[in-house]
Length: 249
Image (cartoon, rainbow, N blue to C red):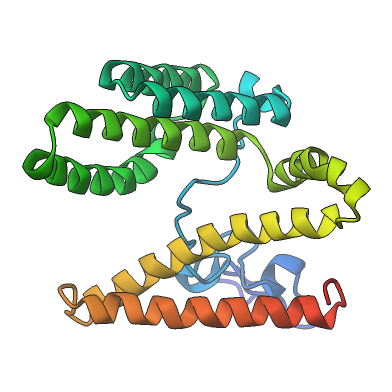
């Protein structure tokens, strides 16, 4: 026979509390005492949207400490070289060099894969058009330019916060203050643009998943129209928020 236990001294399962005992902060947040989500749910309850150019890498490398102005200047030089020479060997060499720079800065390959996949779709279309209406060398040059510029943008966004980018941009346009231009509004506009690019790419991904779930993966309307409507709503909500705070006229 087993001994009768007094009430409230029995074995408690994860997430349960004794009578009269206040729940902990984890339990109020929908988690058990050992930190696991209750009921198999994720902490946020929703799946994170993939970002086109990624978020800042938590694993810091030497590239994180480089001033933002130097990074922007390097991107400008890379873009000029790729556009001026238009040589596939030079452009693909720049891309390979930038990949090595990313690895030396402790950025894992998985942080590049998604953006490379999106860029590959554009490159394939360009290559097909160049095959029929141009030359293969021109197609390889354009492909190298796209990948080099995309990789440079990746290195910037993965090692630089949005706040650092806005500060650098505000410093660049600061001479316009002498002409009576509000540089803070320009910096805010740039920040909203950067955020909108990632947000809209996430909306396209969500619309694609929804279309596949309904068996409409071949329907362009089902994949594009919802993303367009939600993008318009996002723009309207952003405008209302700015107007409510009196940030812009």
